[in-house]
Length: 248
Image (tube, rainbow, N blue to C red; front, side, top):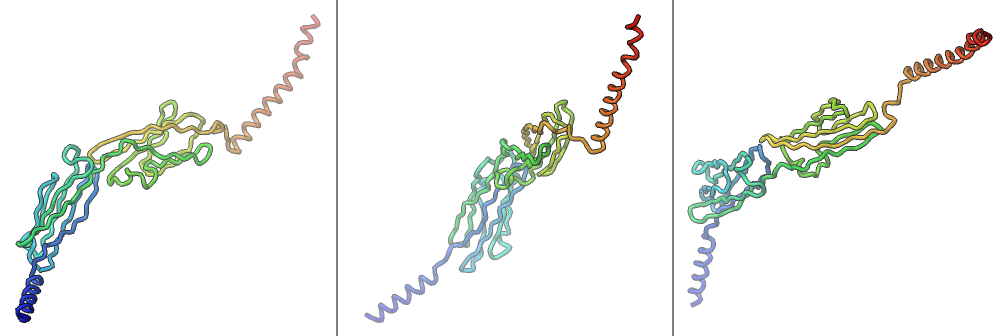
């Protein structure tokens, strides 16, 4: 009886040790915006060293490529050129399957599509009475800073609609030459292309444009002084000119 029990336990242990383990799938979800090509890579492993193949359910409009049957543990990629109307804004889920011929494993993957942010405004900091720093993308934590390929352009016009400045840098500096209202137009574009523009107003202080260089200042004083001397001399000459007329 004891021998039978021991034999049964031995057979049970052999059976447990010989159980097949399903293959494992590793994949990192991806994020992108319209106009980009995003690829999600998939790899597999198998604890029993069985040959693994993989496939998918075509849950997103994209291209699936794999090296099935050419390596022990197959790998693959799902690549999608994100286009408005073809991939949804938000989550785009699809399922990947891996099989070793005995068991099949599934994994849900996701490509998150961020829509173009139609609420972008630059951050404007007034540095001096007439100098402004314009940061078109603002705080680094703002969601639109995650958009690869997002381009932007700043244009500043005066009240007469004259173009004063054009800049494509993330941060630009504008010094107002005179006291007036300036308009800042910022255009944001993606590769699709989608575009959005914002309009902001810059107000320099009232003393802008009155500040003169030292040379101009002394020239200004000299002219005023000459005018004052001429005025005094003209007053002195006035009685001499009018006295003969009054005596008549």
